[in-house]
Length: 150
Image 1 (cartoon, rainbow, N blue to C red):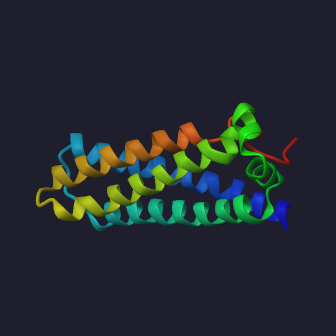
Image 2 (cartoon, helix red, strand yellow):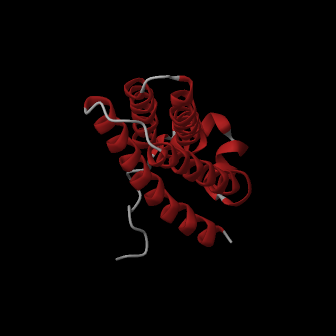
């Protein structure tokens, strides 16, 4: 079961990244281009947030039930903290991704509170940028970006 969930987690990673880019482009173009806030702007933000929700659920399944890395890290937490690879998956990856989820949800929720379109885009841009930065910090760059492709 671990390889299947890990494969889905890897695929959904790219959905999250693509939606993050799309949400960022729409937010910044709307902000600096002083464009109207549209239903598509709202939807892209919601899809970005939902994709992170799905990714977090898959990640939690891996973290809690299936990953040997986290299982051994949680068995001997002191030793795991002295091993950068184990520490990354036991603490840092989860921390960054939970922050990304919070920031993405703020980016899709807070524009609703603004009255002007530019303000809506600015709020989305700021929070989606923070979410994207957390995602970039939390991606395990030492692992293959496209597992199983050679």
